[in-house]
Length: 212
Ligand code: SF4
Ligand code: SF4
Image (cartoon, rainbow, N blue to C red; front, side, top):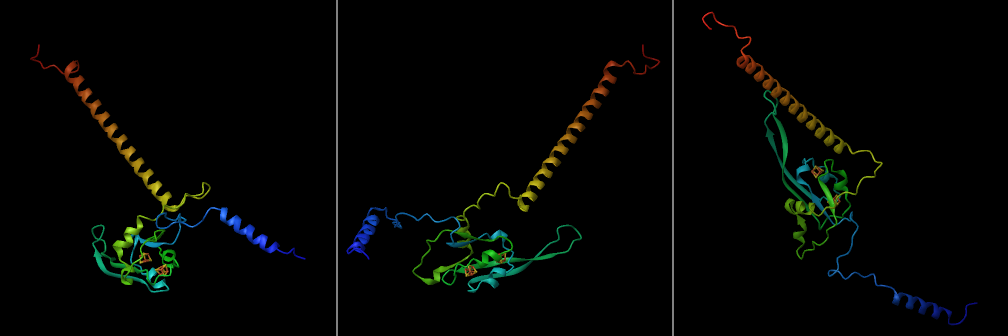
């Protein structure tokens, strides 16, 4: 059987405990909240990586990605080659008044052109201003946190492996051409010495009959 007044005592104990505990309320906007690095605040566009494949716009459940583009003909890289056509981005915009922050566009982009930024301070008084055009989306890119470091036991990512191999190849080619240059310079030097001896020492210079 419960002792009369025990419930009241328990309640007061909870109140006292809570009163003496530090408050967890953040005084935003004076104090900015410490958000996890991978928070979904806003989407940044790294335009250089975008090939205008339209996958993100097609997969977006809210149809809030607007992309316009045109085709451009690129001259052949080598003489006799074929002309190629490529897509040129004219417009890339995201309407954040419709976006539900599902991240599907970022997941499906095959060229790593879209990233989450933890920035969230872009409230507007006019809903139309929540359509962020490509320049604004690019600005968000500079607030995207660096990826976490790789596990030391992880396999080297193929992009880094390819870049490392290319750098090693370039270094080796540089060293080979330096070596070849040094050898050539050495041979030229030796040739000059040989000719000089021949002229200065004149021991082997054939004497003409009239010379005395
Ligand atoms: S996060 Fe989701 S809703 Fe927002 S733009 Fe990307 S796909 Fe569309
Ligand atoms: S999926 Fe990526 S590459 Fe394709 S249009 Fe969207 S942002 Fe550009």
